[in-house]
Image 1 (cartoon, rainbow, N blue to C red):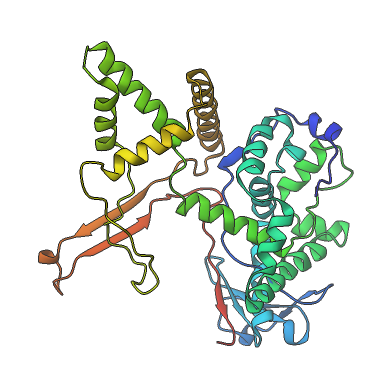
Image 2 (cartoon, helix red, strand yellow):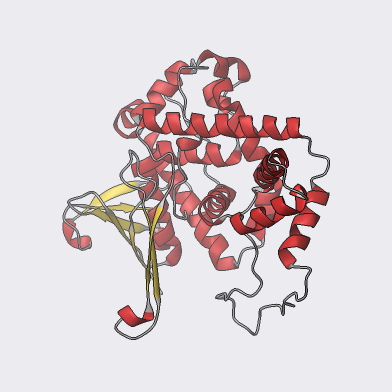
Length: 370
């Protein structure tokens, strides 16, 4: 994927820092046909506050209008045309964010920003999927989803081809940030991203799922906490400090409760056996975890903790400097049955993202078949 050599990337080492504070963009991308061009139609072509831009060709075309806030509405007679227009509009609004997000979630930021992002890339390449795995994931998707992703990608790429078609179009349509980046990389013109692929959208989806829906993965931190408890209790002269530490640990840690209700339908859920007797499930869980982590030394654990703290600090400082979201949090409200109109409990949750430049969220209105 790299368009910039390692020699060139060193030229801007330390000048720019994006890191993990560059956030993933939501949305799919689709569009058929190469060389699609945009043309402006009359305002009556769609319900909009301003003129309507028609992009694509034939059955794969779409009409894009924008309201007074700039929010695009994409209207098409085919699903492929709808996703093509969605990709076009997203590239028109956020070509820089698309490129930096893709590099962030696929571990290629250091190719353009130099060694300052190498740690970020190493983390992504260690924890996420390889290009071959992303292709397999795309191939496993239903045909209609593959078609949508392909059309969305075509829309992004069609806009990019138009934007880079001439010196005049570059001045009018290529984001300013790419001119700066091209200059820093020693290129004769603005930096140009490689074409967007359906697998890139899969990679962004994986990142979103892991970022917002992932849990666990804290075993080393759990082990450090347990070691701390055992040492503190031993220092205080507590008998059987190891067993006592496990008891305190089980009260404080997040545990898997097989008796907790879930939203998984009962006919598809696997039956669970609730442990009974003196050997509690939590004690067995701790024992298994300790056995699996027996080779982790306190020194290695401390080194991992230091590296994690450094990464978190870099992410936070980068977010503050760029004025973008760098830490998360959400609202959650639980309503008791006695306080609800229908006598049922209500759990409400919403992201607490605040405002960023650019925002982690995008808004498009899509109109097409079905």
